[in-house]
Length: 180
Image 1: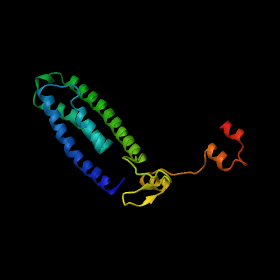
Image 2: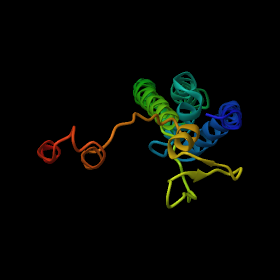
Image 3: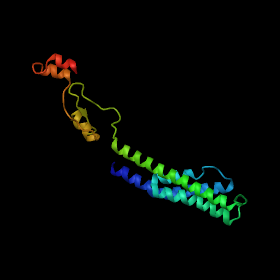
Image 4: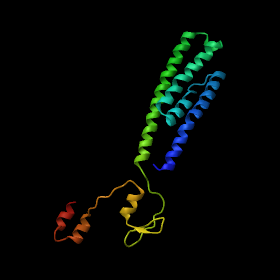
């Protein structure tokens, strides 16, 4: 990962708490207007994806507890049975905590995969005869050197059975090449 990419990831993570808090406040307000199933999932998912498991758990536990507190202290008509609402809040906390855990693992796995894979894209100007590649600076370099420089691939040289027969025919009999 380059320095510029790392800086942009850090900026996103710095703003994650603010975005998650705004999403949490908005989903809490929407839930107070009219209960919408699964409304708290969005801020929990955003916080877990960009901020990790800790931030996701803060929202997974905080939003249902905040909703419970608002409903109990403002004497919401929906909260006539406090025991049921406590149970509901605990179920929400548990399910949202599981969601936070899964999202943080998924984000971590995606980050590992993106670090593992560096893809060469675009059209590569390659010599039709010697197979050297012209770099952005105009210099020609071997295929192996170019790919090693611009990706994380490494090379191990060998030769195929056709080339073995062509160049080392006396040491590499044709019947041995056919077996491969």
